[in-house]
Length: 319
Image (tube, rainbow, N blue to C red; front, side):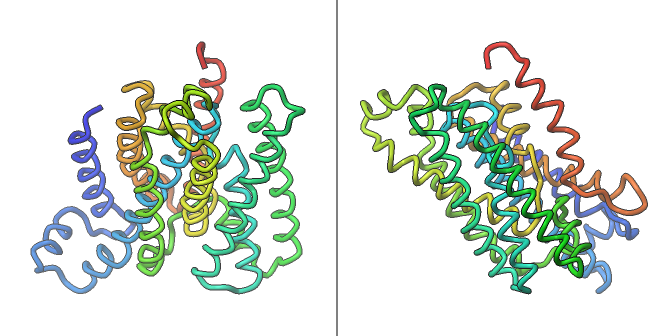
């Protein structure tokens, strides 16, 4: 999968996303905006609504797919991703608490981040206890159990604070509706920091896949690198969840699609995964916007795509 081809695909998706919406402002109006001859209404719809929406979708797609790809190498488990391991549920708990307490976007992301990182370390701690012989399997089960437990707490919080019910329930299903430039400005630094770290250390992921002893033999401080990976993937996941809600399975669908095409070399796999995700997520959002008279939650679409894909990975020989 060629990087220039993926970049061209991203540009095509970007222009398509900016040209499609409930309002009748299409490609012609987009060209007028680019030339600076569009009226104020067209500028407002395309630049103040559609553009932040597609950028938000790209940021969330890149964050979740890069996290999933890295966690699969970290845990040496092809089914690992922020949603399955409970990190997204942990971030959801923090974000729901921020809604309950009436915090702003910054407070929501901070609470989501703290909750996500605590959840990630709890899953890692339980999955690495000496009682479990199969480490990666235990981590996966621990993640599923903790995700279920946190989902129960989230449901209880929603029930007890019914005045925020509609807002929280729609947010939990995952959506890019009501995008704000402030969310982009806030998310972008976290995305750049997290993605930069993962890309800069992508070779280490190859070593981790071959086992801890091999990674130590080539000079990697495995314990420290694991902690750093959990920190940065939690940062990316919590930021994505805080601004878009729970959008599951992106961290499985995209990395494995790219892995099937180009293999396990993370110096190629990780950037290709990020670029495919930044095209995939806006396409899902387009379908969510135009498939009905209203709007389908993006998380519902990725769940319908990811469930069968998850089963395919389970049944696929060699995983």
